Length: 351
Image (cartoon, rainbow, N blue to C red; front, side, top):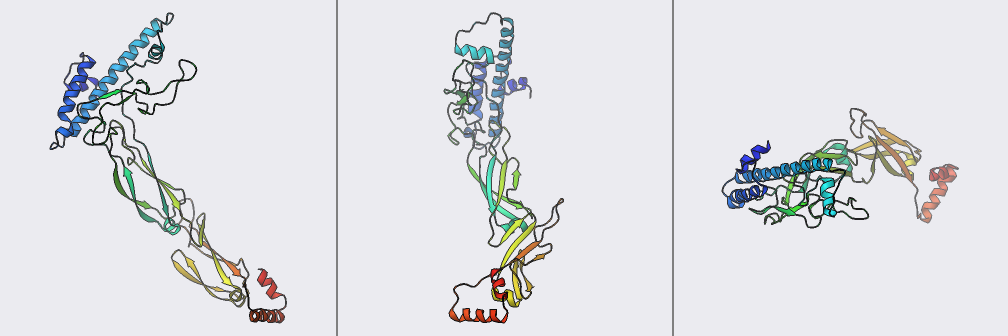
């Protein structure tokens, strides 16, 4: 929208003074503020348009002044006349002492850390999350201003948006935290949002987590972050996935590893053992004389594949447990077994 259109919105002439623009803005802002028009659903939109027009005209006037100073500086470069610290900044940087006009800025990105079980990450799940959102305050149109009021120069940085200090007159300092680098602050805050321009509101999301999601995966929900300043674009919501450890499953790439404990007697005589899987249980015949470290593989029972990776398997490893705290009778039976099969018991026990 051209600057001339902004003048038409406020109903003033392009050659009017900035003070006349301010007075007209206060009248229109008070007239169209949503607080004064509770039954008019379009009042908030009109109020936002009036505020945007006022800020645009201020920006255009400040830019014109800055260009004029640049031309003066070029003509008078050989004879600079600085009367003080404030003039140094005005002449060198083109910054007015009353601070640069405000402009829109994008909203902040939000981060949400979501922990899900390992099985849910592999199989896929829809998780419901609740995030504290910051939608624009409707009564003030996101400006943070009370009806009929405006912004004033930040007293902490004198309208520059930065703090200056240290040795040397032209040393830049950090961004002013009082005004967040804008150079201006709310003169009279909106009573609904305390001048923030947004209000806290919980919002629920149903996040579809696809099968095979890895730990540390990130999902970005566009436009669901913090509200922008002066109708700037909203930030994004970043959801970071954390996969919780499982009791007996571990993931290695797309493979699932599972350790299965069997007793010394079961390993020696052989038996059918029940092995847990992602979908339940599966029975496997354990051969006689099974040693610790024996493994079997369930093809395709791991994490699903991707366009660049094939589906994983489930790798099962047998752990043979050695009996402890044996009674006299149990030790006698083991000695008898060792006598009948010399050397085999010791090797099996060490395995």
